[in-house]
Amino acid sequence: MSEFTPAPNIGAAIGLDHIGIVGADLDALAREFTGLGFNLTPHATHASGRTANRCVMLRDGGYLELMAVVPGQSSATLDRFLARGPGAHILALEVADEAAAHDRLRRAGIASEMSTTERDAGQAGAKARFALVMPPDPPEGRVLLIRQLTRDLLWRSDNVIHPNGAVALIEAIHATDSPAETMTRLSRLAGRAAEPDPLGGFRIPLAHGCVRILPRAVAATLFPGAVGALLLLGLTIATEHPTNTTNDRVVHAGGVAIRFIAARG
Image 1: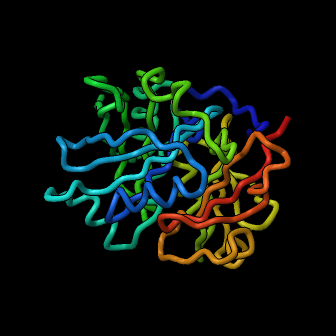
Image 2: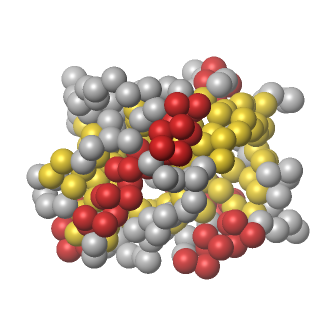
């Protein structure tokens, strides 16, 4: 996890909440991620039953949300995402105070919508609730500011243990031809200052994880074999087994490149 301790700012992002990975077929997505050693939550629906998800909940922070349109239904949003290609379309950042985040964006001249919404939690009748601040979509995809209101329904002892040892989402990596432009947009939305990345480009450190914005050529060295048109190219996930054979290895699933590294002490 990041050792960065941000200055007090109740309207700014404090961590990586989740990454939304969109595909045409949820069952196919689930098979890919199960094949990588992830334990997925049961099939659940949202958006009035038009879309469905399965999630990879990570014990020490963050999760991956696999999403697709329910057969026979339609979703203009997911169709628009898929027109750009499958992969990671949503970067959700955790905030401690959604009203303060909404006000911070307003003062920065960024219009946003604030709401409280819910979705199935994978248990009979259970509904996970979260407060959501949604600014207009930037070129990098969709960026959400979110506060989980029912964490106990999502992070449970039966869904945070993974055969591959995954414990935390620690990096979201954007690959772009214009790192400074992407950094400026994401830094404003997160409410956090960026700093130079050791590999080139920039990083936005958070209390839990960080967002990295790398030149495409640099990102290609970090994620060999990664392809696709999406700017949110890859993720880094920490595992709890220092000798895990997945560590320091890049895999590909659902249009996303995933790098496993050993969790720090």
